[in-house]
Length: 191
Length: 105
Image (tube, rainbow over the protein chains, first blue to last red):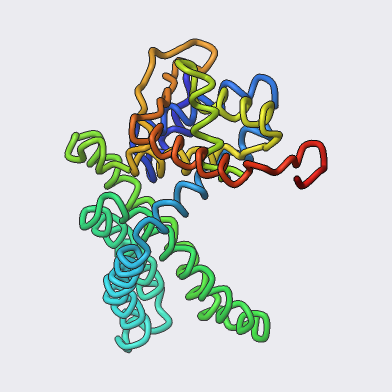
């Protein structure tokens, strides 16, 4: 049976027919070179496609990434407010349920919005936002957690933030696949 | 030396109707001694196509590729013209030099 996962992954950053051809080339060489080579090059091709999408129009991708940061700020502040600014919710499970709900929901919506805003570059901007956000959280939150591992509130904040990259990318991927499936994107715009 | 993108177009020309990802990589490795990663090849092909120097078409799906089609590349007239110009300039620079035998005449 044909495994479509690889071409679906490639089609997030390039047109669907190019993605099919690339996945086919790797599948053809897999017979000689093995599975490790295949999956290593699936990752490398995905990275190359992302870099190509980002470097073709760097200012546009940067602007989209910044717009994504702004879109994410509103649910991020609402999540913080839900935990710390409402006295009744403080230290109650409701606050800690509200935080991931608002952050992850916001991330999902941001991903979908960026792709709707710019079908060609939105996915690359989302990936950049996810990588940048993870790097910031690990860079600033990691040492703080290391110094004070007993601070469960902060650990929970950081963990919720780190996981937010997944709904961000999922929202973008689902929006892009919907646009491609509904043929809203002409072939050239899919790239 | 010719640039990597010129080598890529020369490999496509050599392969005629059978120029797609796998064969182009093999041709570059055999003839130019250059191993190109698939990711680098696809981005280079996409850029050449954006510039109008090559064009591509999808073929019929084949079973050994898991039922996936190949994307065949062809050098366009503009690509040929640019390639010929670059190679003529290269030949002019080489003219009078005998680098293969080690003598700089």
